[in-house]
Image (cartoon, rainbow, N blue to C red; front, side, top):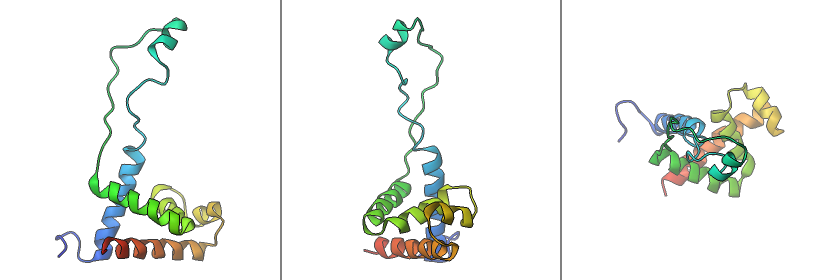
Length: 126
C-alpha cells in the first residue's frame, strides 16, 4: 500500500507534512514576480526598471496544496489544533516556545499536534 520509503500511514503523513512545510516556507513566499511599485511610480521617483531581474516562479505541489486546504478546513473546526500543527512544522523553535506563543501548555501543545495529525489521517480517508 505504501512506498518502500513509507511503511505506515504515520510515516507517509510525516513525509507529506514535511514536504508541505518546505513548500510553505519557500513556495508561498515567492510572490508573483511583480515589483512592489508600478513602473509609473518608479519613474516619478527618478528610478528606472532593471532588465536583469530574474523572474520568480511559484512552485506548485499538489499534495502540499491538499494539506493546506485540509488545514484551512481544520482551522474552521478547531483553530488552535491547526495553529499548533502549523507552528510544529513551520517554526524553527522549541516545543515549549511554540506552546507559549500559542498560549497553551507544552503537554497540551503536543496533544494538539497529535490530534491534528489524526484528524488529517481521518479526513484523508473520506
